[in-house]
Image (cartoon, rainbow, N blue to C red; front, side, top):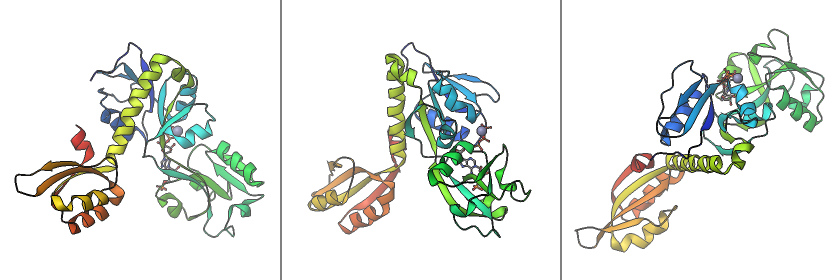
Length: 292
Ligand code: PRT
Ligand code: ZN
């Protein structure tokens, strides 16, 4: 399907970083076709009136706020740090991390309050300031650009406030987590101006609906199975979710085939109970494959 309404919609993405690959993959997943070339600022979509703009992630919130781009994909931590006035439309389920406070392993500090009067190095001074004010904690913020984790070893700071995902960086630098500020992930944001423009808002809404559908599909598995008709009420009770399953009669007398979508988190539990209830020939497919 061609998405076009005569209005150019511009989406800002990180040009080269942690979020780039998954952002592009998500946009392709909702049917946008484009070729991105390294170090190019723009990419046009072949099948939609959409243009991609590749920039540093730090610039994305402001560009979207000012309407230079209509939408963006960026870490929520960056939106917070830039104090950008943008509409957050959807969390995207990748780029998960937590902004934390950490101290050298040998430090006596065990909680954020122990950092009163201390120096904290961070690339997130705005978020840290807000946190310290909220907690009534008086500490000195040492704003840095690069790797915060080396600041204590260089005696530039007594603690750091940095993003953590696996925790490897903290461990490798002999740092210990003493408090969390907030959790973050990649989010889809839109500019207020674009949302007020009827045509652009309509296109944004279409892309958002597709994204939501794709993200939901990724959390689901599609199941087909056979069962005696007599087991149907029991199986329908076990199958949680979306809608009632599709039921198709089979050539074999008294047998039916069922099709249903099941959430990934409860999937194995549900499958075991369905087997106990008489289900057989269970076949599982990722919903995404079925969608296409
Ligand atoms: O060049 P540009 O400015 O565009 O990129 P950048 O270097 O500023 O950002 P980049 O690509 O490193 O991160 C982009 C976004 O990814 C961040 O804004 C976060 O929203 C998200 N993200 C998710 C992370 C991490 N996880 C993460 N672990 N960003 C940074 N880190 C760093 C962290 O700062 C620390 O140095 O990774 C280290 C810790 O990782 P672990 O796995 O060892 O805990
Ligand atoms: Zn950056």
